Image (cartoon, rainbow, N blue to C red; front, side, top):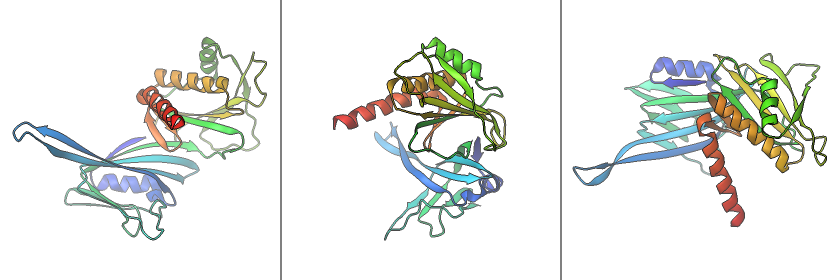
Length: 275
């Protein structure tokens, strides 16, 4: 889901679509300033401020992670004092006045942005309970095409990578959500050292609005090299063959940037270990 916000009608759409992010919470706030070199004066001059806010919220049985990127920012406030937490949202307020968009993310105005325009990126997934004892990784992909990967396609890509897996359909007494199309487990085969509890649970679903597909991968068992490699192969092949966005935790990553994001994360973890 991608949507540009430039006027009052767009703001009304945003509130209707998100329910005003009621009972959601802000997971990340970032501000960036651009500066350009002015050849006439020989100095760098301001060229715009951008603020992005990531929000996790639930509506109509779906968990949604939204990234609201506000550009041309002329006023920005984030203020927490005496133990206040402006990350918890009630319902946001918006206004379009004098050609500017205004966002109040909390009633006290402790998180407040005035900007020229905004852009919403969002990934929605059916609500599933996390098993903290067994689930060690989760990755979601929201594709732009009508058809996504099939079970046969996933098995074929793993075979090509020398990581053969068997497929086991999931059996549920009650469906998680009407949007879920199919789900099951990819279970490694041909490895005598592998645990029987090691598996990748795959859930395919249709997005709540618009076209495209959703695919959620949840890795269970022991965090060993083989399971990490299976997840790496699947995510690499999906992002190479399908256009869309990835979701890791509450971070939305364009599919075309997935490989470079992984490299940066690997270097960051390596540096943390060395320190």
